[in-house]
Image: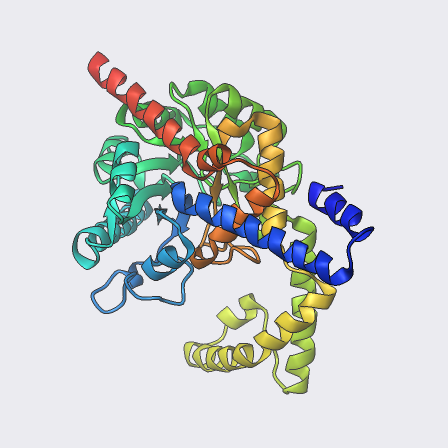
Length: 435
């Protein structure tokens, strides 16, 4: 029983319903005001926001309130100070030609981020390379961009590219994504039990050493459990999981079990809890997906429209596929509001409370100094209540509801992650001196 509820029960014995409701409303207003004050004071930092280079042009860019989840207007509205923009490359074949294509794709994204901060919106957002940069930029009233690399696949077999990526601004990197890379096994190997390296490859072990040397945080959010445990043992600096949940609450291979959490705590690293529906609540996400399919099928039948499986759609000749895509988009525009309304009763959405449950679990399991916050916006992330950067305040509000102090919230939003970055860069300077 919460203190507020207990107080309301006691008050109801002596006060009338009108007085009681007024008191509840006053208490809620005070809580929101407290949360707002904390939110405006702390540096809020989200470690994982994917990007599309098409949104970094002179005509279309982050100075506009685009339909995506993260851009400058949405960050301003929600009070999100720091966005880690992601150089993501999907997993491809393990050969030189594929590595070259991946490398070019990665460089395009590095260049896009630099274009945003240097040409498109230099007065609004600036690239940070250190924790001191973050604090300086935020104090000046500007937003902060930082760079993470999701999947080190673009390194190919050229380990010198680790330093190149660091020079381009990368401050964390994962060694695999959805599929085994030349560097590490992926969590996706759990699906069929097939592994390529039984953890890290020899090249992957070299990559860990190079990342330590050049000040890039080792990210554990996509590799396999064995790869992660090996990386923690090898790393001479603290590690991070840039966007992962607690597996004890949601049994997904992308989440971290208690053994990995304990190893990260011992390493002095940090886990950035992720607001990604299917990593927050498997049950809610599965039910919602099933009911969405069911309702869409019913609505499509009424419209005499056939929803094709994606694989079947992709087999259509190009012209037919384009025509079908236009019809599907029109159907979705009409059906989506109906689907959302009907889902409220039969399949409630994964929400901020569910997300903060992961933060609570992680804090209790490994301590307040080892937990942070991430969204995976524009990469599939988001929950009801925090579905884009404009809604960032709602996370702070829920933390305040649960009794977290300003000092604790400051650690969760940015303090812990920046502490790890500082430690990683101290280790890097020491290693560079040794060589």
